[in-house]
Image 1 (tube, rainbow, N blue to C red):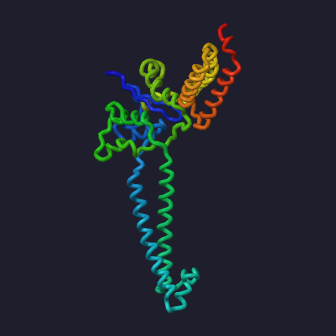
Image 2: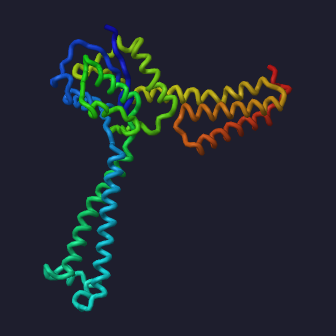
Image 3: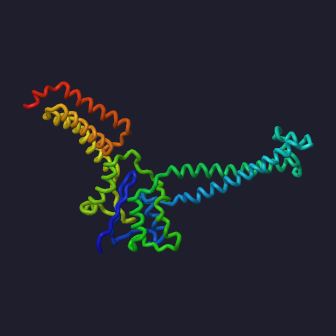
Amino acid sequence: MPRKEGEAEHVQRTISKEESSDKSSSWPSHSYSAIAEVQGHHDGLAIYRRFATLNAQNLLYMQSELMNLEDELKRLVIAESRSDDETRRVFKHDVTAMKYASADAPGSRQWKKISEIREMLKEYNEALYQQSRINKLPKANHHDLDVLREWYKDPDFGGMILPLPESKAWDEDNDLIALSKRTTDTDIFTNWVTDTLVPKFHKRIGHRFKKADETTMLVEYTDSKLNDAAQVVSMVISSLFAPASIFALYYVHPTPIRLGLIMVFSAVFTACLAIFTSAKRVEIFAATVALASVQVVFIGTNNPGSNVP
């Protein structure tokens, strides 16, 4: 049987699925316990539904309840403030009198309504806060999700056959979140290394050296090492670009062509910064201007007649 593979990238590791006939999981296969064990061993696979629609619907219902309670309280307050009974009129500015009114007094109804609103507000505010926290959780990484889906559907591993609608738990890409946050300042090049290069490396070479976890049958690659290697490559390319452009300008004589080359070098340098670094746009702009300034100074101070050695 051919070896099955997958990959996933998380803050601290990249995961690839390995075939193995020796499984030492303490949980029975084809069970929620088996999936829980995989998610517990590999943080990147801790992917769940956030139920965005249900949460929004719940908030809307609670909001509607509160609006109705608010309207009822307003009517009670207005009615008490217009009452001919002096005892009831003081409720609008005497909370103690309203709170300790007799059980059958109108003020007691107003206080009960306030207490009801208070409980509802607590639930509503907690739901709002929880929803705001949930919305900040990162979306599931597509590699993590592919590995989880592959493991889940593989008869040799998860092999689960769940009834509907449970079997569609990981089908809604836009509604899936990860509990572990991936590195937010990773550049495009590093993402390419971890998401594309590493899986290909593992498929052709890495599987000969990396052993699968005996419990989950997944292979991990440490992200920190991958990020360090990608950063070294990025720094080398960035450090060589400026002298390389000056070297090229040294052997070009016509000034218009030199100026055109400066434009080309600036565009390529900007693209390199965007791809190989996580710099902000203003930082990329400043670095590009600095490089162009160095090149212009070189043109201004270099005698074209002495360019040929």
